[in-house]
Amino acid sequence: MSLMGVDVGTTGVKAVVFSTDGVLLTSAYAEYDIRRPAPGWAELDSREVWGKCRQVMAQAAAQTHRDPVQAISFSSMGEAMIPVTRDRRILGPSINPNFDLRGQAYLAGLSDSLDRVRLYNINGNTLGVIYSLFPLKWLKEHRSELYRQTDYFLLWGSFLPFMMGAEPHVDYSLANRTLLFDLERADWSDELLGWAGLDRDKLPPPVPSAQVVGRLSQQMAAELGLPAGIPLVSGAHDQCANAVGCGVIAEGLAVLGMGTFVTLTPVFSHRIPAELMLARGLNTEHHAVPGLFVCFLYNLGGALVKWYRDTFAQAEHRRAQEEGRDIYSDLFAEMPEGPSPLLVLPHFGPTGPPEFIVDTRGVIVGLQLDTPRAAVLKAIIEGIAFYLKEILDDLPPTGIRVEELRATGGGARSDAWLQVVSDIMGMPVTRPQVTESSALGAAIMAGVGCGAFGSFEEGVAAMAGLERTFEPDAAQHRRYLDRYAFYRRLWPLMRSFLQDYARGQASDD
Figure 1 (cartoon, rainbow, N blue to C red):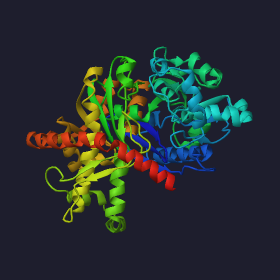
Figure 2 (figure 1 turned 90 degrees about the vertical axis):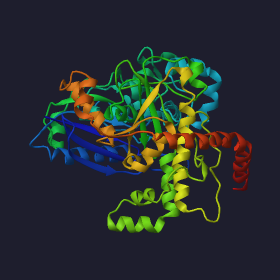
Figure 3 (figure 1 turned 60 degrees about the horizontal axis):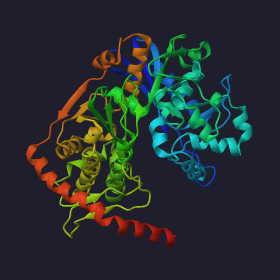
Figure 4 (figure 1 turned 45 degrees about the horizontal axis):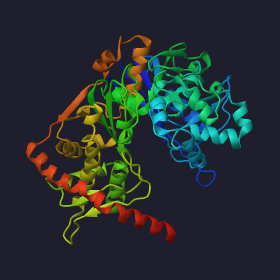
Protein backbone atom coordinates (compact mmCIF):
# COMPACT_ATOMS: atom_id res chain seq x y z
CA MET A 1 0.00 0.00 0.00
CA SER A 2 1.31 3.46 -0.87
CA LEU A 3 0.18 7.03 -0.21
CA MET A 4 0.64 10.13 -2.36
CA GLY A 5 1.35 13.60 -1.01
CA VAL A 6 1.11 16.57 -3.37
CA ASP A 7 2.78 19.85 -2.34
CA VAL A 8 1.82 22.97 -4.33
CA GLY A 9 4.21 25.88 -3.79
CA THR A 10 4.64 29.40 -5.09
CA THR A 11 6.85 28.39 -8.02
CA GLY A 12 6.62 24.60 -8.23
CA VAL A 13 4.63 21.47 -7.44
CA LYS A 14 5.88 18.11 -6.22
CA ALA A 15 4.09 14.75 -6.07
CA VAL A 16 5.71 12.12 -3.86
CA VAL A 17 4.64 8.55 -3.16
CA PHE A 18 5.60 6.86 0.11
CA SER A 19 5.09 3.39 1.48
CA THR A 20 3.24 3.26 4.78
CA ASP A 21 6.55 2.75 6.60
CA GLY A 22 7.86 6.06 5.25
CA VAL A 23 10.05 4.89 2.37
CA LEU A 24 10.05 7.33 -0.54
CA LEU A 25 9.04 5.27 -3.56
CA THR A 26 8.92 7.88 -6.31
CA SER A 27 8.56 11.60 -6.88
CA ALA A 28 8.11 14.15 -9.65
CA TYR A 29 8.49 17.92 -9.75
CA ALA A 30 7.56 20.73 -12.14
CA GLU A 31 8.12 24.48 -12.02
CA TYR A 32 6.02 27.44 -13.12
CA ASP A 33 6.51 31.18 -13.03
CA ILE A 34 4.76 34.00 -11.23
CA ARG A 35 3.31 36.26 -13.90
CA ARG A 36 3.29 40.04 -13.61
CA PRO A 37 0.80 41.34 -16.19
CA ALA A 38 0.96 44.87 -14.74
CA PRO A 39 3.24 46.71 -12.29
CA GLY A 40 2.58 45.52 -8.74
CA TRP A 41 0.58 42.48 -9.87
CA ALA A 42 1.57 38.87 -9.14
CA GLU A 43 -0.47 35.96 -10.47
CA LEU A 44 -0.26 32.29 -11.31
CA ASP A 45 -1.84 31.04 -14.52
CA SER A 46 -4.36 28.69 -12.88
CA ARG A 47 -4.75 26.47 -15.94
CA GLU A 48 -0.98 26.16 -16.42
CA VAL A 49 -0.41 25.22 -12.78
CA TRP A 50 -3.29 22.75 -12.82
CA GLY A 51 -1.67 21.18 -15.88
CA LYS A 52 1.67 20.91 -14.08
CA CYS A 53 -0.06 19.33 -11.07
CA ARG A 54 -1.63 16.68 -13.29
CA GLN A 55 1.72 16.14 -14.99
CA VAL A 56 3.65 15.40 -11.76
CA MET A 57 0.89 13.22 -10.31
CA ALA A 58 0.85 11.15 -13.50
CA GLN A 59 4.65 10.87 -13.55
CA ALA A 60 4.75 9.73 -9.93
CA ALA A 61 1.83 7.33 -10.40
CA ALA A 62 3.54 5.69 -13.40
CA GLN A 63 6.16 4.24 -11.04
CA THR A 64 3.70 2.70 -8.56
CA HIS A 65 2.24 -0.28 -10.41
CA ARG A 66 3.75 -2.72 -7.93
CA ASP A 67 2.41 -0.73 -4.99
CA PRO A 68 -0.67 1.24 -6.13
CA VAL A 69 -1.58 4.50 -4.46
CA GLN A 70 -4.47 4.05 -2.02
CA ALA A 71 -5.15 7.67 -1.01
CA ILE A 72 -3.99 11.21 -1.83
CA SER A 73 -3.75 14.36 0.26
CA PHE A 74 -2.40 17.84 -0.30
CA SER A 75 -0.12 20.52 1.10
CA SER A 76 -0.18 23.99 -0.38
CA MET A 77 0.86 27.59 -0.06
CA GLY A 78 -1.73 29.78 1.61
CA GLU A 79 -3.63 32.89 0.52
CA ALA A 80 -3.70 32.43 -3.29
CA MET A 81 -7.19 31.47 -4.55
CA ILE A 82 -8.63 30.21 -7.84
CA PRO A 83 -12.10 31.17 -9.16
CA VAL A 84 -14.08 28.10 -10.30
CA THR A 85 -17.62 27.06 -11.18
CA ARG A 86 -19.59 24.18 -9.68
CA ASP A 87 -18.92 22.14 -12.83
CA ARG A 88 -15.16 22.54 -12.30
CA ARG A 89 -14.34 25.21 -14.86
CA ILE A 90 -11.44 27.54 -14.09
CA LEU A 91 -12.46 31.16 -14.61
CA GLY A 92 -9.28 33.14 -14.07
CA PRO A 93 -5.77 33.47 -12.65
CA SER A 94 -4.73 32.96 -9.05
CA ILE A 95 -3.65 36.25 -7.43
CA ASN A 96 -0.88 35.78 -4.88
CA PRO A 97 -1.30 38.51 -2.22
CA ASN A 98 2.17 37.83 -0.78
CA PHE A 99 3.63 39.56 -3.84
CA ASP A 100 0.66 41.46 -5.29
CA LEU A 101 0.05 45.10 -4.33
CA ARG A 102 -3.56 45.51 -5.44
CA GLY A 103 -4.94 44.98 -1.96
CA GLN A 104 -3.01 47.86 -0.42
CA ALA A 105 -5.69 50.35 -1.46
CA TYR A 106 -8.14 48.72 0.97
CA LEU A 107 -5.86 48.35 3.98
CA ALA A 108 -6.33 51.74 5.60
CA GLY A 109 -10.13 51.72 5.32
CA LEU A 110 -10.44 48.24 6.73
CA SER A 111 -8.02 48.92 9.59
CA ASP A 112 -10.07 51.98 10.57
CA SER A 113 -13.26 49.94 10.83
CA LEU A 114 -12.15 46.92 12.89
CA ASP A 115 -10.13 46.93 16.10
CA ARG A 116 -7.03 44.73 15.79
CA VAL A 117 -7.74 42.95 19.08
CA ARG A 118 -11.24 42.09 17.89
CA LEU A 119 -9.81 40.80 14.60
CA TYR A 120 -7.25 38.69 16.44
CA ASN A 121 -9.82 37.24 18.81
CA ILE A 122 -11.89 36.07 15.85
CA ASN A 123 -9.27 35.06 13.32
CA GLY A 124 -5.91 34.82 15.08
CA ASN A 125 -4.05 37.04 12.61
CA THR A 126 -3.02 40.66 12.42
CA LEU A 127 -4.28 42.84 9.59
CA GLY A 128 -2.05 42.82 6.51
CA VAL A 129 -2.36 42.65 2.75
CA ILE A 130 -0.92 39.13 2.45
CA TYR A 131 -4.31 37.47 3.04
CA SER A 132 -6.92 36.31 0.49
CA LEU A 133 -9.44 38.91 1.62
CA PHE A 134 -7.68 41.64 -0.34
CA PRO A 135 -7.57 40.12 -3.85
CA LEU A 136 -11.17 38.96 -3.35
CA LYS A 137 -12.19 42.51 -2.57
CA TRP A 138 -10.26 43.80 -5.58
CA LEU A 139 -11.94 41.24 -7.87
CA LYS A 140 -15.39 42.16 -6.61
CA GLU A 141 -14.74 45.82 -7.37
CA HIS A 142 -12.65 45.62 -10.56
CA ARG A 143 -13.67 42.25 -12.12
CA SER A 144 -17.29 42.24 -11.07
CA GLU A 145 -18.43 39.88 -13.86
CA LEU A 146 -15.79 37.27 -12.96
CA TYR A 147 -16.69 37.64 -9.28
CA ARG A 148 -20.39 37.18 -10.10
CA GLN A 149 -19.77 34.08 -12.26
CA THR A 150 -17.54 32.40 -9.65
CA ASP A 151 -19.26 29.75 -7.56
CA TYR A 152 -16.25 29.08 -5.32
CA PHE A 153 -12.93 30.72 -4.61
CA LEU A 154 -10.65 27.82 -3.65
CA LEU A 155 -7.18 27.80 -2.14
CA TRP A 156 -4.75 25.50 -3.93
CA GLY A 157 -4.89 22.72 -1.36
CA SER A 158 -8.65 22.45 -1.82
CA PHE A 159 -8.70 23.29 -5.53
CA LEU A 160 -6.73 20.16 -6.50
CA PRO A 161 -9.02 17.60 -4.83
CA PHE A 162 -12.08 19.51 -6.10
CA MET A 163 -10.82 19.23 -9.70
CA MET A 164 -10.14 15.52 -9.10
CA GLY A 165 -13.68 14.75 -7.94
CA ALA A 166 -14.01 15.97 -4.33
CA GLU A 167 -16.74 18.14 -2.91
CA PRO A 168 -15.90 21.85 -2.43
CA HIS A 169 -14.11 22.27 0.91
CA VAL A 170 -11.18 23.95 2.63
CA ASP A 171 -9.24 22.71 5.64
CA TYR A 172 -9.11 24.90 8.76
CA SER A 173 -5.44 25.89 8.44
CA LEU A 174 -5.82 27.12 4.85
CA ALA A 175 -9.13 28.83 5.66
CA ASN A 176 -7.25 30.84 8.29
CA ARG A 177 -5.03 32.32 5.55
CA THR A 178 -7.99 34.22 4.09
CA LEU A 179 -8.46 36.50 7.17
CA LEU A 180 -12.18 35.58 6.99
CA PHE A 181 -12.21 32.52 9.26
CA ASP A 182 -13.46 32.23 12.84
CA LEU A 183 -10.96 30.07 14.75
CA GLU A 184 -13.24 29.24 17.66
CA ARG A 185 -16.28 28.34 15.57
CA ALA A 186 -14.18 26.69 12.82
CA ASP A 187 -16.36 28.38 10.23
CA TRP A 188 -16.47 31.52 8.13
CA SER A 189 -17.02 34.64 10.20
CA ASP A 190 -20.13 36.61 9.27
CA GLU A 191 -18.63 39.60 11.07
CA LEU A 192 -15.40 39.52 9.04
CA LEU A 193 -17.22 38.82 5.78
CA GLY A 194 -19.52 41.77 6.46
CA TRP A 195 -16.55 43.95 7.39
CA ALA A 196 -14.85 43.04 4.09
CA GLY A 197 -18.05 43.22 2.01
CA LEU A 198 -17.65 39.66 0.67
CA ASP A 199 -20.12 36.82 0.11
CA ARG A 200 -20.15 33.69 2.26
CA ASP A 201 -21.68 31.54 -0.48
CA LYS A 202 -18.58 31.95 -2.65
CA LEU A 203 -16.40 30.20 -0.05
CA PRO A 204 -16.41 26.41 0.42
CA PRO A 205 -17.35 24.65 3.67
CA PRO A 206 -14.41 24.38 6.13
CA VAL A 207 -13.42 20.88 7.27
CA PRO A 208 -10.67 19.41 9.50
CA SER A 209 -7.49 18.08 7.92
CA ALA A 210 -7.25 14.33 7.17
CA GLN A 211 -10.94 13.91 6.27
CA VAL A 212 -12.13 12.06 3.16
CA VAL A 213 -13.71 14.78 0.99
CA GLY A 214 -14.38 12.73 -2.14
CA ARG A 215 -13.20 9.98 -4.46
CA LEU A 216 -10.96 10.17 -7.51
CA SER A 217 -13.20 10.43 -10.56
CA GLN A 218 -13.05 7.91 -13.41
CA GLN A 219 -11.93 10.61 -15.84
CA MET A 220 -9.08 11.83 -13.62
CA ALA A 221 -8.07 8.28 -12.73
CA ALA A 222 -7.65 7.46 -16.41
CA GLU A 223 -5.60 10.61 -17.03
CA LEU A 224 -3.35 10.20 -13.98
CA GLY A 225 -2.92 6.43 -14.08
CA LEU A 226 -4.28 6.05 -10.55
CA PRO A 227 -6.99 3.70 -9.25
CA ALA A 228 -10.47 5.16 -9.69
CA GLY A 229 -12.40 5.82 -6.50
CA ILE A 230 -9.44 6.10 -4.12
CA PRO A 231 -10.01 8.60 -1.27
CA LEU A 232 -9.17 12.25 -1.70
CA VAL A 233 -8.24 13.53 1.74
CA SER A 234 -8.28 17.12 3.01
CA GLY A 235 -4.77 18.43 3.54
CA ALA A 236 -3.26 21.51 5.19
CA HIS A 237 -1.37 24.76 4.79
CA ASP A 238 2.20 23.84 3.82
CA GLN A 239 3.67 24.96 7.16
CA CYS A 240 1.29 22.65 9.03
CA ALA A 241 1.89 19.76 6.64
CA ASN A 242 5.61 20.34 7.11
CA ALA A 243 5.13 20.01 10.87
CA VAL A 244 3.29 16.70 10.47
CA GLY A 245 5.98 15.41 8.12
CA CYS A 246 8.75 15.94 10.66
CA GLY A 247 6.75 14.82 13.68
CA VAL A 248 6.01 18.20 15.24
CA ILE A 249 2.62 17.23 16.62
CA ALA A 250 3.06 17.93 20.34
CA GLU A 251 3.83 20.88 22.59
CA GLY A 252 7.50 21.56 23.21
CA LEU A 253 8.44 20.90 19.58
CA ALA A 254 8.88 23.37 16.72
CA VAL A 255 9.72 23.09 13.04
CA LEU A 256 12.84 24.88 11.87
CA GLY A 257 11.97 25.34 8.19
CA MET A 258 15.14 26.26 6.28
CA GLY A 259 14.08 27.47 2.86
CA THR A 260 13.81 30.95 1.34
CA PHE A 261 12.30 31.92 4.68
CA VAL A 262 13.80 30.43 7.83
CA THR A 263 10.67 29.75 9.86
CA LEU A 264 10.11 28.49 13.39
CA THR A 265 6.70 26.86 13.83
CA PRO A 266 6.00 25.98 17.47
CA VAL A 267 2.96 23.97 18.58
CA PHE A 268 0.58 24.85 21.43
CA SER A 269 -2.75 23.58 22.67
CA HIS A 270 -4.82 26.61 23.68
CA ARG A 271 -5.73 30.08 22.48
CA ILE A 272 -3.40 32.69 23.97
CA PRO A 273 -4.70 36.16 24.93
CA ALA A 274 -4.49 38.64 22.07
CA GLU A 275 -2.40 41.17 23.94
CA LEU A 276 0.37 38.61 24.56
CA MET A 277 0.53 37.51 20.92
CA LEU A 278 0.04 40.92 19.29
CA ALA A 279 2.88 42.41 21.31
CA ARG A 280 5.17 39.80 19.75
CA GLY A 281 3.74 39.98 16.23
CA LEU A 282 2.56 36.37 16.43
CA ASN A 283 -0.41 34.70 14.78
CA THR A 284 -2.52 31.69 15.76
CA GLU A 285 -3.52 29.05 13.21
CA HIS A 286 -5.11 25.62 13.45
CA HIS A 287 -2.56 22.84 13.19
CA ALA A 288 -3.48 19.94 10.93
CA VAL A 289 -3.64 17.88 14.14
CA PRO A 290 -6.98 18.29 16.00
CA GLY A 291 -6.83 20.37 19.17
CA LEU A 292 -3.47 22.01 18.40
CA PHE A 293 -2.40 25.42 17.09
CA VAL A 294 0.75 26.83 15.52
CA CYS A 295 2.32 30.24 14.99
CA PHE A 296 5.10 31.42 12.68
CA LEU A 297 8.38 33.16 13.56
CA TYR A 298 10.45 33.89 10.46
CA ASN A 299 12.96 35.92 8.52
CA LEU A 300 14.40 35.85 4.98
CA GLY A 301 17.35 33.75 6.11
CA GLY A 302 17.52 31.35 3.18
CA ALA A 303 17.37 34.23 0.72
CA LEU A 304 20.27 35.85 2.57
CA VAL A 305 22.40 32.69 2.27
CA LYS A 306 21.56 32.62 -1.47
CA TRP A 307 22.63 36.29 -1.70
CA TYR A 308 25.98 35.31 -0.18
CA ARG A 309 26.38 32.50 -2.73
CA ASP A 310 25.54 34.74 -5.68
CA THR A 311 27.69 37.64 -4.44
CA PHE A 312 30.78 35.93 -3.02
CA ALA A 313 30.90 32.63 -4.94
CA GLN A 314 29.33 33.21 -8.34
CA ALA A 315 32.10 31.51 -10.33
CA GLU A 316 32.31 28.55 -7.94
CA HIS A 317 28.54 28.15 -8.14
CA ARG A 318 28.70 27.97 -11.94
CA ARG A 319 31.43 25.33 -11.82
CA ALA A 320 29.57 23.32 -9.20
CA GLN A 321 26.45 23.30 -11.38
CA GLU A 322 28.47 22.10 -14.36
CA GLU A 323 30.04 19.33 -12.27
CA GLY A 324 26.79 18.34 -10.51
CA ARG A 325 28.08 19.32 -7.05
CA ASP A 326 26.33 21.15 -4.22
CA ILE A 327 28.05 24.52 -3.84
CA TYR A 328 26.63 24.96 -0.34
CA SER A 329 28.62 21.98 0.96
CA ASP A 330 31.81 23.68 -0.24
CA LEU A 331 30.87 27.07 1.21
CA PHE A 332 29.86 25.76 4.62
CA ALA A 333 33.05 23.69 4.79
CA GLU A 334 35.06 26.95 4.59
CA MET A 335 33.51 28.44 7.72
CA PRO A 336 35.82 29.07 10.70
CA GLU A 337 35.47 27.23 13.99
CA GLY A 338 33.61 29.05 16.76
CA PRO A 339 31.69 32.32 16.50
CA SER A 340 32.45 34.60 13.58
CA PRO A 341 34.35 37.82 14.37
CA LEU A 342 31.53 39.63 12.55
CA LEU A 343 27.93 40.43 13.50
CA VAL A 344 25.11 40.52 10.92
CA LEU A 345 21.76 42.25 11.32
CA PRO A 346 19.72 40.17 8.82
CA HIS A 347 17.48 43.02 7.65
CA PHE A 348 18.41 42.54 3.97
CA GLY A 349 14.70 42.40 3.08
CA PRO A 350 11.37 42.91 4.86
CA THR A 351 11.50 41.42 8.36
CA GLY A 352 9.06 39.09 10.08
CA PRO A 353 7.81 39.19 13.67
CA PRO A 354 7.79 41.08 15.89
CA GLU A 355 7.96 44.35 13.92
CA PHE A 356 7.40 43.43 10.22
CA ILE A 357 9.68 46.22 9.00
CA VAL A 358 9.49 46.94 5.27
CA ASP A 359 12.05 49.75 4.92
CA THR A 360 15.27 48.82 6.70
CA ARG A 361 18.74 47.69 5.67
CA GLY A 362 21.11 44.88 6.64
CA VAL A 363 24.30 45.52 8.57
CA ILE A 364 27.65 43.67 8.71
CA VAL A 365 29.75 44.79 11.70
CA GLY A 366 33.46 44.15 12.22
CA LEU A 367 34.87 43.93 8.68
CA GLN A 368 38.64 44.34 8.35
CA LEU A 369 41.10 44.04 5.48
CA ASP A 370 41.99 40.48 6.51
CA THR A 371 38.37 39.27 6.99
CA PRO A 372 37.86 36.08 4.94
CA ARG A 373 34.62 35.63 3.04
CA ALA A 374 33.74 32.53 5.08
CA ALA A 375 33.50 34.71 8.19
CA VAL A 376 30.72 36.61 6.44
CA LEU A 377 28.75 33.40 5.78
CA LYS A 378 29.22 32.23 9.38
CA ALA A 379 28.00 35.61 10.65
CA ILE A 380 24.98 35.45 8.34
CA ILE A 381 23.75 32.12 9.69
CA GLU A 382 24.50 33.29 13.23
CA GLY A 383 22.50 36.50 12.64
CA ILE A 384 19.56 34.49 11.28
CA ALA A 385 19.59 32.35 14.45
CA PHE A 386 20.04 35.37 16.77
CA TYR A 387 17.00 37.00 15.17
CA LEU A 388 14.83 33.95 15.91
CA LYS A 389 16.34 33.43 19.39
CA GLU A 390 15.30 36.95 20.34
CA ILE A 391 11.67 36.07 19.63
CA LEU A 392 11.97 32.65 21.30
CA ASP A 393 13.36 34.27 24.42
CA ASP A 394 10.24 36.43 24.59
CA LEU A 395 7.80 33.48 24.40
CA PRO A 396 7.59 32.30 28.06
CA PRO A 397 4.84 34.80 29.05
CA THR A 398 2.65 33.31 26.28
CA GLY A 399 3.01 29.77 27.63
CA ILE A 400 4.45 28.50 24.32
CA ARG A 401 7.29 26.07 25.05
CA VAL A 402 10.06 25.19 22.59
CA GLU A 403 12.46 22.49 23.78
CA GLU A 404 13.53 20.83 20.52
CA LEU A 405 13.68 21.90 16.88
CA ARG A 406 13.05 19.65 13.87
CA ALA A 407 14.92 20.97 10.82
CA THR A 408 13.44 20.70 7.32
CA GLY A 409 14.07 22.21 3.90
CA GLY A 410 17.23 22.61 1.85
CA GLY A 411 19.26 24.20 4.64
CA ALA A 412 18.66 21.19 6.89
CA ARG A 413 21.13 19.20 4.78
CA SER A 414 24.01 21.22 6.28
CA ASP A 415 25.48 19.70 9.45
CA ALA A 416 27.42 22.91 10.08
CA TRP A 417 24.35 25.14 9.92
CA LEU A 418 22.33 22.89 12.22
CA GLN A 419 25.16 22.76 14.78
CA VAL A 420 25.37 26.57 14.82
CA VAL A 421 21.61 26.80 15.44
CA SER A 422 21.83 24.23 18.26
CA ASP A 423 24.79 26.04 19.87
CA ILE A 424 23.04 29.44 19.71
CA MET A 425 19.63 28.25 20.86
CA GLY A 426 21.03 25.94 23.51
CA MET A 427 18.65 23.15 22.52
CA PRO A 428 18.68 19.99 20.37
CA VAL A 429 18.08 20.29 16.62
CA THR A 430 16.95 17.05 14.97
CA ARG A 431 17.07 16.33 11.25
CA PRO A 432 14.37 13.96 9.96
CA GLN A 433 15.12 11.27 7.40
CA VAL A 434 12.99 13.21 4.90
CA THR A 435 13.87 16.92 5.03
CA GLU A 436 11.40 17.98 2.30
CA SER A 437 8.59 17.06 4.64
CA SER A 438 5.50 18.92 3.36
CA ALA A 439 4.73 16.14 0.88
CA LEU A 440 5.41 13.53 3.57
CA GLY A 441 3.02 15.35 5.90
CA ALA A 442 0.38 15.26 3.19
CA ALA A 443 0.96 11.52 2.69
CA ILE A 444 0.56 10.93 6.44
CA MET A 445 -2.74 12.84 6.31
CA ALA A 446 -3.80 10.66 3.39
CA GLY A 447 -3.05 7.62 5.54
CA VAL A 448 -4.99 8.96 8.51
CA GLY A 449 -7.93 9.90 6.31
CA CYS A 450 -8.20 6.54 4.53
CA GLY A 451 -7.82 4.53 7.75
CA ALA A 452 -4.30 3.19 7.15
CA PHE A 453 -3.46 4.87 10.48
CA GLY A 454 -5.73 5.29 13.47
CA SER A 455 -4.30 8.69 14.39
CA PHE A 456 -1.72 11.31 13.48
CA GLU A 457 0.51 9.88 16.20
CA GLU A 458 0.37 6.44 14.61
CA GLY A 459 1.06 7.85 11.15
CA VAL A 460 4.03 9.92 12.33
CA ALA A 461 5.49 6.97 14.24
CA ALA A 462 5.26 4.81 11.12
CA MET A 463 6.45 7.27 8.48
CA ALA A 464 8.34 10.26 9.94
CA GLY A 465 11.69 8.77 10.86
CA LEU A 466 14.49 10.84 12.42
CA GLU A 467 18.07 10.78 11.16
CA ARG A 468 20.31 12.72 13.57
CA THR A 469 20.14 15.05 16.56
CA PHE A 470 22.62 17.91 16.97
CA GLU A 471 23.18 18.66 20.67
CA PRO A 472 24.40 22.09 21.82
CA ASP A 473 28.07 22.38 22.77
CA ALA A 474 28.09 23.99 26.25
CA ALA A 475 31.31 25.97 25.70
CA GLN A 476 30.17 27.27 22.30
CA HIS A 477 26.76 28.16 23.73
CA ARG A 478 28.44 30.34 26.38
CA ARG A 479 30.51 32.09 23.71
CA TYR A 480 27.42 32.65 21.61
CA LEU A 481 25.54 34.15 24.54
CA ASP A 482 28.24 36.82 24.73
CA ARG A 483 27.85 37.51 20.98
CA TYR A 484 24.08 37.50 21.34
CA ALA A 485 24.27 40.28 23.93
CA PHE A 486 26.00 42.47 21.33
CA TYR A 487 23.48 41.40 18.65
CA ARG A 488 20.56 42.53 20.82
CA ARG A 489 22.05 46.02 21.00
CA LEU A 490 22.53 46.33 17.25
CA TRP A 491 18.98 47.05 15.98
CA PRO A 492 18.05 49.52 18.77
CA LEU A 493 21.36 51.30 18.11
CA MET A 494 20.89 51.42 14.32
CA ARG A 495 17.10 51.71 14.03
CA SER A 496 16.67 55.44 13.37
CA PHE A 497 19.76 55.66 11.16
CA LEU A 498 18.75 52.69 8.96
CA GLN A 499 15.17 53.88 8.57
CA ASP A 500 16.33 57.41 7.68
CA TYR A 501 18.84 55.91 5.25
CA ALA A 502 16.14 53.77 3.60
CA ARG A 503 13.90 56.83 3.20
CA GLY A 504 16.81 58.79 1.75
CA GLN A 505 17.50 56.08 -0.83
CA ALA A 506 13.81 55.95 -1.75
CA SER A 507 13.72 59.71 -2.33
CA ASP A 508 16.88 59.49 -4.48
CA ASP A 509 15.14 56.90 -6.66
